[in-house]
Amino acid sequence: ITSSFSFSVTKPLLRNFYAGSFPNVEQIVRNALGQKIQQSSITVPVVLRLYFHDCFVNGCDASVMIESTKYNKAEKDHPDNLSLSGDGFDAIVKAKQALDAVPNCRNKVSCADIITIATRDVVNIVGGPWYDVELGRLDGLSSTAASVEGMLPQPTDDVNKLTSHFAKNGLSLDDIYKFITYIYICNIYDIIHTIGLAHCTNVLDRIHGVKKDPSINATYLPQLKDLCPKDVDRRKEIFMDPITPGKFDNVYYQNLQQGRGLFKSDQALFTDPRSKPTVNLWASNGQLYNQAFVNSMIKLGRVGVKTGRDGNIRSNCETLN
Image (cartoon, rainbow, N blue to C red; front, side, top):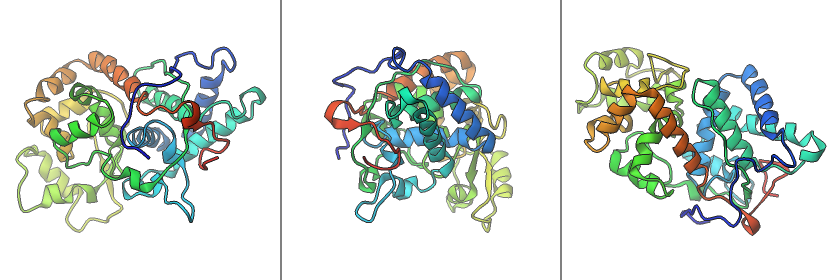
């Protein structure tokens, strides 16, 4: 497995890839996703996280879906992926089953494309922009836990480290600014940021550490300490965005302006002079941010695309076959 990616593919991704043969593919996925969300609302943020964790490790090829065997420890069992909720995996499996129930769709749509469609849909469901997705990916032929090491951004990363992670995937510093709400939603420690919850254990060092973090808002810090005392139950969760939880919007950037970024990596975007102007821009113009977000989402979807002999269409999203 290689850790370098290329946007060069032998068969280009197309926005209408299935239009001629399976025109209802996206609607079938959306319907299946809607049913899953009715059963478990946590499906929305965990599908987002699933996409991010998949694309940043060997490209958007559904390799994060693979179950480990006695002969191979797969990506999903790396420590950085253990917090990925089973509802996200189940949503993709259910969508695959729904497609395969249609005779002319059976084993014709890759799990990687299903994840891409589902991600666009959950963004839209929580108030984010609708956009046409590029499709035509194949599923990856391998998945190892070792390939995950060092590939995903961490809550303590500064802008330099975030830049390094994005550069590995052909994404620029500008993409970080455009795309950071996605990081904020999808970061690696059981967090669902702007539309969900985070475990208190992920911020204990920052709010109770010996060395005070000057970037934390003076009124926000005692609130966090009350919510997450030193002896807090490790299972306790708090809202990542106390202003508009459960909604996709640009309030995240407004929170950063006020020193209310929960993680150090979030607040660093405002304290670093390279990214601060962009944070201010997105905070003041939600529509402009949405447009930039769509561009970066599409760009991420091109990372490490598998085509030809490099991939296949799995009959089961969770096994290599």
